[in-house]
Each structure stands twice: as structure tokens, then as C-alpha cells.
Image (cartoon, rainbow, N blue to C red; front, side, top):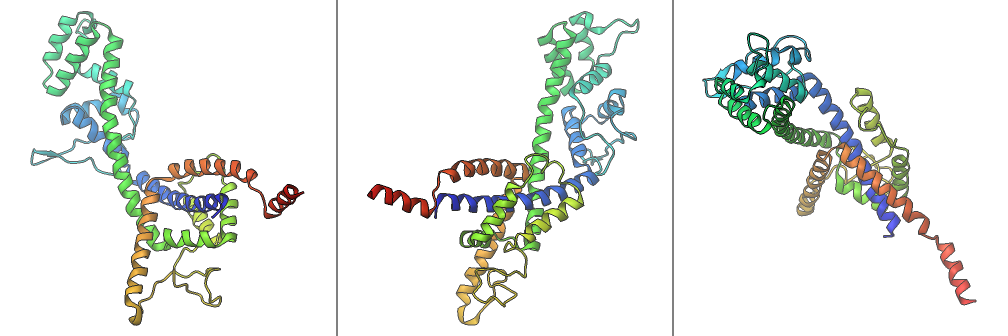
Length: 343
């Protein structure tokens, strides 16, 4: 196969993965907007950061610097037999993001308040450490002691130290969320793949052997906006638009599709779309279903990588294609070159 044709096949596969990924992303974001799982993870991360101190966590969320970020009030999370903290209820009004500066200032105000005469505890590091020693929460006490000793009497460095402590913990929270979302997207994608019968192996075979199909997909990929495709794909109208695009391209997707490669042009169902069991060829039938299931899982795994990933890959491959295409010559040009060489 020529280089340009190989690139077109790659563009076709990437474009299909991108469209289905956009559908999964949109559905996942709609579920996230309802359940607010980011907020749940953030609250759990803060509780772990504060050594599962429910009272201190409530004080942080009730502080004006934090309370102003969400509606309603923070409700204490009950323990499960006193051994394991339950997760905060999904669908709450807690904030999905708390700036590190807000958290640091709130914690300083709660744990290191000003003296009764209004002077700051930060005036003397010795008095400050004595104040920290009175904090009952072990994690907070040790963390603040280390930060204060490192920062000295510099209140800005103390605040920055608390911000760094908070940010490092939030990196872990972000990791939780990303891993869970990837699992959700995989299983959600698998469900969509089964519903749409999006088999990577069948799609690849059709792209390799069907030039008009390749050309139509490449044209559609070229018309894809350079920006905004991923960001504004969370509405139901966008989901429908991406589904319609997949079917309008005459891709071998769905449970009832025709193919230009099918020898029986009048047939509605294609053997590749719905593998049938034949008593006289049971081994071959099992092989076809094995390939079908493998193709489904390949598609599900691919779309679990996310729409931004495939959008970036598509842009890079399109750039490569634009540089390769001008250098390729048509058969007529090759024949003229040979005639010139003979003369």
C-alpha cells in the first residue's frame, strides 16, 4: 500500500476513535455535572490531608474564604464504625476546586489565630511553634512545624509552604479522579461500542479496501475545526451530531449496514456486521466472533484514551499527510518522467 493510502487509513481510524470518544466524553461530563464526583474527591482528599479530622474539615469548609465558593453548608461525614471515613454524598453542592491560597489562609486563620490584643502570632517563631504544639491534629501539627521552621518568620513563605503541601495532596486527588474516569470511560465506551457495533477490525478492513470511504472520511477530518471540538462537545445536541456523522460517512458501524465490498449488493445485513453460526463451519464461525469481540475491545480501549488524545494525534497525522501528498506523483507523471529519461 502506498504511503498516502496508509496515512488515509490511519486518519480514518483516528477520526472514528475521536468521534466515539467525544460521545463518551459528553456523556461522562453530563454524569459528572449531576453527581459532582470531583467535589467528592476533593472533600475526601482534604479530610485525608487533615488526618480525617472531621471537625477541622468542617471548619475549613465553613470558613468565609471557602464557604463563599459553594451554596449551602458543609455536612459532617459520619464514620463507619469509627474505622473508615465514608465518602461525602454524590450530587452535593461542595466546590469542585478550592484555590491553594484560600485553603492556606483559612488553615492559618483557624490553627494560628491572632492574639487577643490583635498582634500576629508570626512575630516570634518560638511563640508560633508553641501555638502549633497545642494543635491536637498530629498531621497538621507536624506539617505546620516543618513549614514554619523552614520559612522562619516570613509569613509569605509560611503561606506558600502550606500551599505547596495542599497542592501536593491535590495532585494525588487528581490522580484518583483520572484513574476512575478512565475506568468509567472504558466501560461506558464498551457499552456504546456494543450498541453501535463499532468493530475496529471491520472498520480497518473496509478502510483498506474501500477508496471512496477513505476519501470521504479524510475530507470530513479535514473539515474538523482546529479548536473547540473537544471543549464544546458536552451537550446532547453534540452527541447526536457526532452519532449522525458516524452514520453519514457510511462506515461499517451498526447492526444493519451495507458495504461496497459485499458481493451481494441487495443484501441488507453484512456477514461482517452480524457473524452467523454455521453448523458446517462452526470453527470458522467461532473465529469470526472472536475477531468481532476483539475488535470491540480494541475500540473501547482506544476511546478510553480520551478525545483530547485522539484530537492531537489527528492533527499531527494530518500535518504529515499534507507534507507527503505533494511529493507523490500520479501514474501519468511517472510515465512522462520515464519518456523524458529515454529521450
